[in-house]
Figure 1 (cartoon, rainbow, N blue to C red):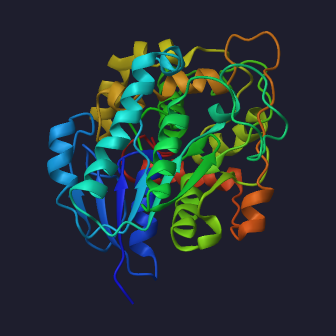
Figure 2 (figure 1 turned 180 degrees about the horizontal axis):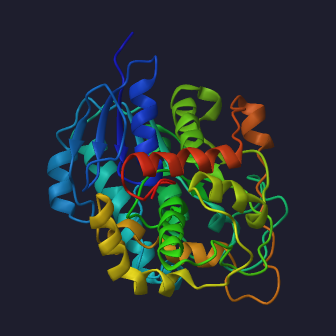
Amino acid sequence: MARKTVLIVGASGVVGAAAVERFLASAEGWDVVAVSRREPPVLVERDFRHLPIDLRDAESSRRAFGALSEVTHVVYSALFEKPGLATGWGDDDYRQINDEMLRNVLGPLTEDAAAPLEHVSLLQGAKAYGFHLGPMPTPARERETRHRHENFYWDQEDYVRELADAGGPAWTVLRPHLITGGSFGVAMNLPPVIGVYAAICRERGLEFGFPGGPAAPWESTDSRLVAAALEWCALDPAAHSETFNVTNGEVFGWRDLWPAIATALGLEPGGDTPRRLATFLPEAAAEWRALARRQGLREPDIANVLGESHHLADLVFAHGMSEMPPAAFESTVKVRRAGFADCMDTEEMWSYWLGRLIEARVIPGPEA
């Protein structure tokens, strides 16, 4: 059997790190090339190749990717986000940069390296259904007409479709919802934010309560589940030239989930304590630095733990809203019918990833 090499782009991110672990642990015997400016935070026993490439640098990208003639599959999970997250989602440069980053990877692989590319996976999300602009269909289904708004999702998808039509690699688009994993200092991952919030509450003797507003039911997707789907769609022709929603397979409410989160962090859940985490947490930078040094945590700079994810927290927690936000549910019937039926308990997911962050000394544990 010919050896397969997967190029995982955005390997230090929440999906990329999980994908590195998944492909390295697979019985398929993948060779893994991980691309990210930081070393991926993974627990692995097998060796892999790490390339610290700035995807916005077209020339260095061309040199690096043009030399990778062994790559057979690409998992593209890189994402450029602007400070404040949602405030930049409608900007022209936000769309342009994300489009160019993908082209800086696939262009050299298909033109210079003449790599034997078989398949490319892209990631989208609920913004494909206009979630950031207003109510979306319930449930959102992949067969619906493309939502009419400017979005780099469409630019990237059209590009891989064009490559496939010209005899290039097959493609699959996955649409997970509120991905949760173990990366920190990234644009969108909530466990590090909640871990820091819990630590500051403990330091100040505050109740560890839900900090948001009238939170609607949510869905989430464990990054390990996304990684499993990425391997599935790389190997199964039934997934090629298709778009699939991927979620844990259940809905949850933040207030109902809060006791499990508190237990994982060794705290008692408190009553509602509305706080805008995008300001509350950065204002606690000095407290975090002292706490991190006292407890031997790996990152004393709070900004390097949060990334931009505290802005995501305020969004999904509906902080400051007076009315319940619209529901955002994605149907997973299509992906299950195609052959991928994995699911995840959301409480177990949160306990697992908080435990990983505690073990890695990113956030303090129950003994703190």
